[in-house]
Length: 295
Length: 290
Image (cartoon, rainbow over all chains, first blue to last red; front, side, top):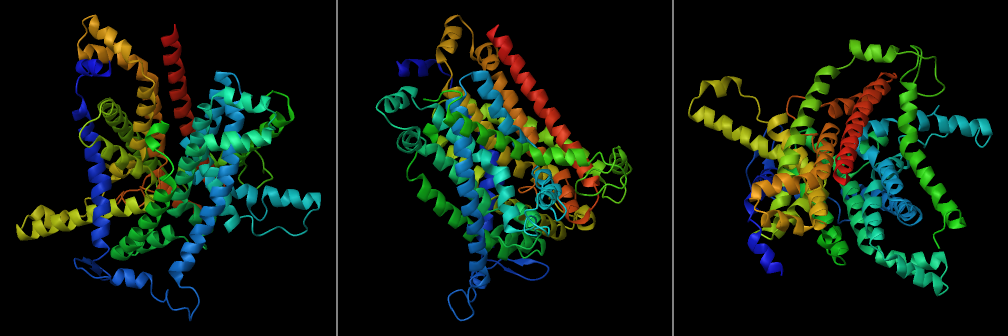
């Protein structure tokens, strides 16, 4: 039967050519060039074609002798992993709960779509403004401090609300929880309601059903969401920069700074390492699923 | 078990409501604060009510030329939107059947979505800087005067900038096309062909009306993601700045509610575009059902 249909379907593969050209010109070639330039030499004014490992040596300088404590690169990665882990954990819990509510408690499709859109709309607005909008709430004289003082929980304004690791994670959660909600919600919609009914009739509690039925069936959604959140935080330099008051370190910020000083081969070497780590994380996570089946 | 009114319902409802407040609370607080009087500060309480800071913004006091970067961002957004729609829809049609390299192209597209933006921005910037040095060397060896005297850089909004943004908008476009075609009833096309329609007629009169709401969705992603894009754009816009780039600079220098006024305006524009697109999707769907 399938074959019969395909006879009548016109071959349209040429339509993918412009699409492919964009990705070759603006994705594949740039990444290859990044790899090549990471072996180049540079001066203050220019970059020089070469094949040296100096840029990589420089990154790991002092990293394998334990005399002076951790080297800058390791410290930066630890800081980046720290933001990754907490953002991942919170977005996962929050995203799961929100998706669970939408998928199982909201029975009317129009309401479901409306509530889903309410969660999505901020994604289509400016990230910078969404970060700036925390200032009146978290600042020294912000709403949170004022409220806590007036209730009497604290006497002095709390300083760590803004321009701190706390505000960075808060902003990352604020920006990227949607990346968890969408794939988990998508997985949940595919769960046969009768499976849940069966578990319920057999005497399972809601908690048991979530742990033993829903979470295993949502695994692909959870993994896709986790990949999105982890990769976006791994390369982040804007949120950590703006919400960290330009005081906190991340690998993305190092690359950005090197680029601003036109140390392009150095930035390229850092990018290659970041990319390898990101790819490693993704490979480990995708061992379990086939992304294409999830659409 | 998922009964409305049950204990579990109340718990998850309260989580959902808190999440929505968490999502929208901050943005509404800066919208409120942007309408303060001239003595207003960056935090609550509100100091009077006026349009003073919008006036200041209009006069451009103390800021870089926001108006110009605003127009540039709108222009680039529309350009990226049009390209995103055309390229995603055509690729979506191609992807309905397996073709040489289709898997590779699909995984490249997904990879583009999750590659760290700063790495991509660096790569595109490198590419165009290398093109620059190529052009300059060429100009010097061939002694082309116009190049030797005036050439600055090939980096720009419509050379490197739009491409870097497309690597972010196109994956969303293609995923939307996949989602619609995975649920597409092919017998409709068969019927159309059986009735004697050629492939163009089948596309325009059968397929297109069905996928039209999704195309509006792709346009929505194309425009809004470009209009607000910053991470991938950060190194590739050349001498010009888009609005998000200027905004980012202002976060460290501006200490008056003028930045809130700007935030209110750009957020309003985003809301306006989102509202328009969603209404259009709704109208297209409704018409289809009728």
